Image 1 (spheres, rainbow, N blue to C red):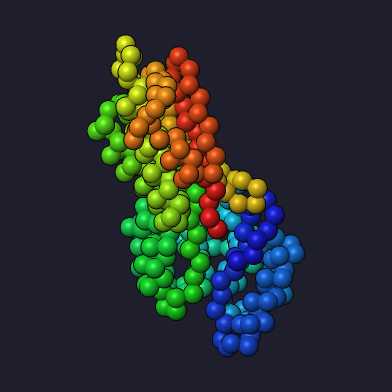
Image 2 (cartoon, rainbow, N blue to C red; image 1 turned 90 degrees about the vertical axis):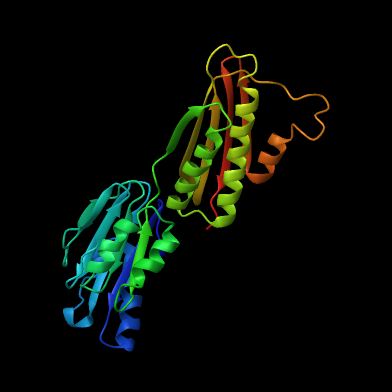
Length: 282
């Protein structure tokens, strides 16, 4: 993997007749890709006898996949609500594909990817690490790159009732898994958002003369050289200020602050919004 500018990543997967040629070819393609960020130019001057290679640039911000190949190799793309498909063959030329939210991309030097491609459909909702283990196990030889594109924003509106909290946790857990978030950050995020939603369920209905709803949002966005998760929990009820001496209760905001990197709470007569930011661990 080669880190390029503008949230772009360069990758190359290949298969060569012998190890010395493989090492030299890998260094040559990587250097050209780092210099030009052009998959076709990275393969310039290579002979089909050198092996089978697929070279690509993944642009996360633009949701774009640009690739070229040497030999009979074709990337495979799948998404949570779209069946897998073989992408356009791009032998010695550039091809481009759009990456849907949550898409899984398989780059493999093995031309026979039938069973692995079909497995993409069953793995579309799994954490990318789990999906990779299942897919790579079906390849021979198992030389592949599997990429998971960030999912679209999660937006969920539920009644401000205790029974809704299980729905919030389940949907957020699924979104975090699809995004490939590490277990520790996922656990922190689930607890922080769950605490904010629980607070809203308990306090926003007090004094409200209408049915109160809670809206939970989650989005993965660029942050500096990496990414961060932005969570928002809002309600259309009334905020209850913390008691001067809450005893064993009233520590929800403190807990949230300990679990995420930044917290902002806004309370008005029209409702309360808690916004949380958490950096994604690389």
